[in-house]
Length: 140
Image (cartoon, helix red, strand yellow):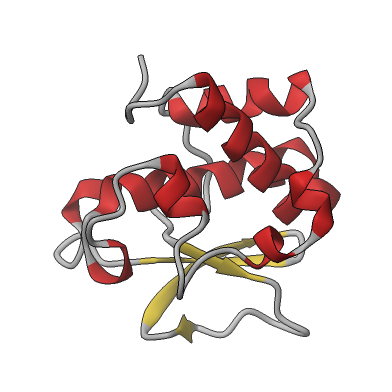
């Protein structure tokens, strides 16, 4: 059962985002990007107040995703990527992105904090950051 409202266009949009942000991280890396996207829609806190749709989340400005500025993002999503997107829309979560709202790819080690948010872990080259439950209860 879906944890957010969605259309097939939303599945396609999330699939394209997941691929563009983390294809080099494999399926699990793409699923974690999907977790962050879904969490941002659920959040209604911190930087993500009034982000209620997939389109608002993907194209949030400022604070959106770098991948939307690259041509690769605008290529058609594959069925395999859409299946991954549906998994995250249906509530599957993967550590360290389980409750994360942010991720980035540092040059070296993951900083303990990034924009005052604590590191929840690393997967391959991406570091994930989660709010506290008191700051953002809807992603827990």
